[in-house]
Figure (cartoon, rainbow, N blue to C red):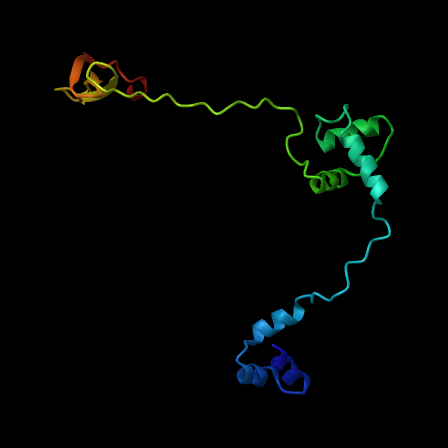
Length: 172
């Protein structure tokens, strides 16, 4: 990149410098626009909040009165009291800096449930069931086939077949 910049600085066209160095002109332009690490740090704005003001706003946000409220609710409640500490965006910015932008209420933590696992090491210990719709002899008639299966041997240990109740969504 230094060779490209030296060539363009000496008066060569960007096209010639790109051809000689093998660097694409778009890459060189992007690199030229990228801020250098030695660039001066961002200047501090005159109306920026000081550390004491930020701590005061954080203390208000974390107070017992407002610990459960969102910044918009805190803002309106403080305005009703005649107090202005900062805008809603400022409150969110300060909360984000302190990693408090989340659900601020105390929530119950439920432990993860262990799904029960049924294991059969012999027949007639664990059964499974299924209901299947079967087409009848005439169009529009169906039967419900109830089946009970032993999961160890995979034998059908019980079954029943009953006429299906009419589906209300298929009525005319």
